[in-house]
Image (tube, rainbow, N blue to C red):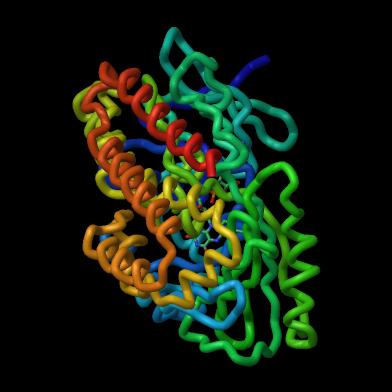
Length: 455
Ligand SMILES: Cc1cc2nc3c(=O)[nH]c(=O)nc-3n(C[C@H](O)[C@H](O)[C@H](O)COP(=O)(O)OP(=O)(O)OC[C@H]3O[C@@H](n4cnc5c(N)ncnc54)[C@H](O)[C@@H]3O)c2cc1C
């Protein structure tokens, strides 16, 4: 068989948020980039999603904000988190957008193309090109089965939650770490047109209820003009219900006649955990959902996919300039990403596992007794830490409401969160220290999981 062969500095598999962001930044730095996706151009940007993203991500990354009427349909002033008994809520303030997801994704794709990126659409990743312990490119296949060889100095896996490239590599490479299914949420969501009463449209609504969404939550995000994005995420775990069944049973029923028509429906997986431990190999980098960069608590992954893409792009460009795209040449990506987001993810992953153990009663208690304010949640969400100030306030209040067992648990969780944060912040500066770091990481998380099991 005769293959068409192409050469690039960088080949990126996946033209989602992570892939298009990385393609744009790397091309802007003057390198040749190929961007591969299964989708046709008309479908680029399409993704089952809650469509909500915080404004701060665009400011922090120096990217153009979404524009209402173009790639956004509305603005949120904050998130309203509602208790299981529906009696209480916490408002977490912070501006965000409801995106027109397809237009937003397409805009990012177009920006990459305009920066000089070459696209191979309607092509899927077939296999990696491996030489020794290096990734040297990929073989891609079109829908008729004809193959092309794309050789490159660096291959980037931005294929989303399946991580098709990294999972195809030799299993003894650190990069192939398997993610346990409990670390994912299975989701179902619909975009509907209707007239939902009692909603303040300046908020994105998150409803906590372990009967409806065990290990996750259900959401109602107004998109403006009588359109709503409504869905739920459930921890992927033996015995947990099917999200679509629970959507029909609880959510649709509760909205009764308010839904006039369903515009779109679908599901997908969201990684809700800390990032994979090793995100680079010789000539290889993983970004976005493929590296599990979404937020462990709320599953939002658009902002962090962009952060991982930007930190990876800076590292890749630097490595190419130095002529060293080896694992050690690319290692700094970990350090930059963990400083920007990964350490927070690790800390919030501890909190996520704790929260997945709580009952509706526990949650009602937390809301009812006012022990956590919107500002506390904002600080926890943006910095990933349960600060001493917050903890001391919670402690004082908990003493008053006499829940010492809960306080003791929370204190332990705070300690694990702090340790996880610091472990990721002190990620080894070279690959040499990785094995020891990984042992410490395993020990910390196994210890925490065992403690949770002992309740
Ligand atoms: C129901 C749901 C609701 C969500 N809500 C929100 C939200 O409100 N806010 C938020 O911030 N995040 C949300 N997320 C998470 C967010 O959508 C993801 O974290 C984000 O899209 C990750 O971007 P990515 O580029 O890593 O992956 P993706 O967006 O999944 O992109 C991967 C790309 O790779 C391509 N690809 C896959 N396999 C191959 C292959 N073999 N060959 C070639 N191409 C391939 C795909 O076609 C796709 O274009 C939600 C997720 C789900 C499932």
